[in-house]
Each structure stands twice: as C-alpha cells, then as structure tokens.
Amino acid sequence: QVQLVESGGGLVQAGGSLRLSCVASGSTLSLPVMGWYRQAPGQERESVAIISSGGTTNLLDSVRGRFSISRDSAKNTVYLQMNSLKPEDTAVYYCYGHGYDAERPYRELWGQGTLVTVSS
Image 1 (spheres, helix red, strand yellow):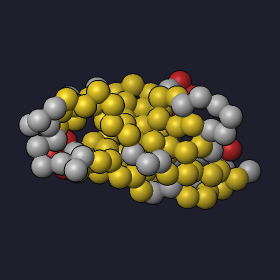
Image 2 (cartoon, helix red, strand yellow):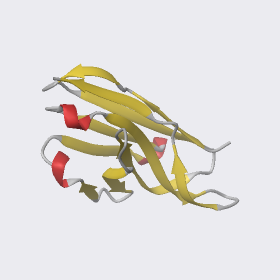
Image 3 (cartoon, one colour):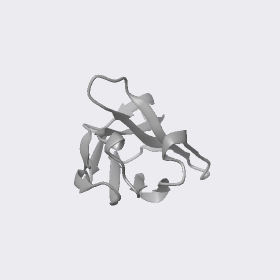
Image 4 (cartoon, helix red, strand yellow):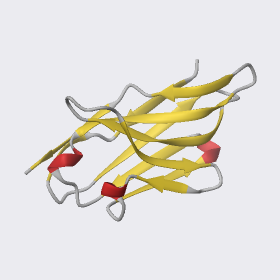
C-alpha cells in the first residue's frame, strides 16, 4: 500500500524550530517530486516547499530564509526544517509526492497532515 506518513508537528513558541519528516512507503515507489503544503483555518492549501530528486528546491516567499527542505531519495523521505517560526506559520502541514511505482503513476499523493501551532 502506497502512503505518506508525516511526523514532527507540535506546539512551539514564536522564534522556535520544528522539523517535519515524511516517509513514503511502497516497495517500487519513486517520487521525483516531494514537498510540503500547508492549510491554515479558513484558508486554502498552499505550497510551502518543493524538492526534486535532483535537489532543486522552490520555497514560498514568506518562508524563504527560515525554512529549508531536504530529502533522502533512497528512503523516499522528505524533511522540512522550520526555524524562526511565526504565529502565521500555524497550519496543518501536508506531505506531498508526485511519481510512480511498478503498476501506476501517482499524480498526487498526500499524507494525513500534521498540525503545527506557533504561539505568540
């Protein structure tokens, strides 16, 4: 069964740090693109950070310089290091993957989400 499982969310004070992890399972799964989206209450889901298998990254302007994304492609794992967190970073963070396995392509794979709450 192909799935993405996130971990690392929680409650942190403004200025603090958190590291999110996401592991994709599936014996033949390949995800050339992985990343993180977030959705705050009453708002639309937005892309926070994307990384390709070659290491090319794209970050949301409001998190650039504070967040970084990395991956271990051999383990189908992606990380989001979040520093200098602000209350406006509070949201449910979702892991995202785009790729394929031996049987089918996956245009969009989503994790179940992990809540990040930043207190002021």
